[in-house]
Amino acid sequence: MADSKQLYQEVILDHNRKPRNWGVLADATHKADGHNPLCGDRIRLTLKLRDDVVDAINVQGESCAICKASASMMTMAVKGKSRGDAEQLVQEFRDLAIGKLDATGPGHLGRLTVFAGVRDLPTRVKCAILPWHTLHAALNSVASTTTEADADPMHAPIGGGA
Image (cartoon, rainbow, N blue to C red):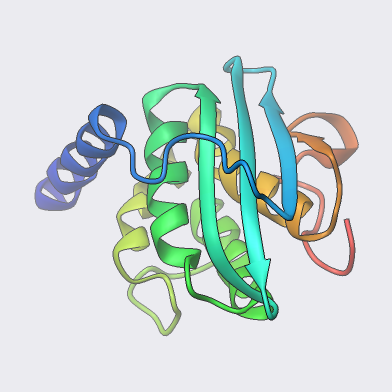
C-alpha cells in the first residue's frame, strides 16, 4: 500500500511540474472548458480529430496538482486513439476514480491506474475527473462543463451525448 501511495505522489508531482501536451491547439477541431468550483480548477481542452482519431490534444488552465497530472496523463493516453476508444477511457477512468472499477482487473487504463487511490479522497475525485469530463464534452461538441449540480461526474452518467 505504501508503494502505491508513493508512486501516486511521484506521478502527481512529475506531471504537475512538467505537464505533457500543455497549451492550446491553434487548429483544434473540438474544444471545451471545464470548471470545478469546489477546488477552483479551470481548464481549456483543445483537440484535433482526423478521421475520427485524436490526432492532437492539449490542455491549459489553472488547476491543482491532481487535476493537472490527470490532464497531462489523459492527453498521453488518448492521443492516437479513436473517438470510441477515448470515450471508453473516459468511462473507465471515471469508474476507477469513484471506486466502481478494480485497478487490478481488466481494462485499458494502464499507467492511469495510479489514480485508483483518489477514490479514498472524496474531495479530490472531482479534481482528477475534471479533465476527462471536459474531454467527453469536447468530443460531443459541448462548449463547457462543470463538476457541480446536474453535471456532477460523481452522479451523472457519462456517455450517450452530453
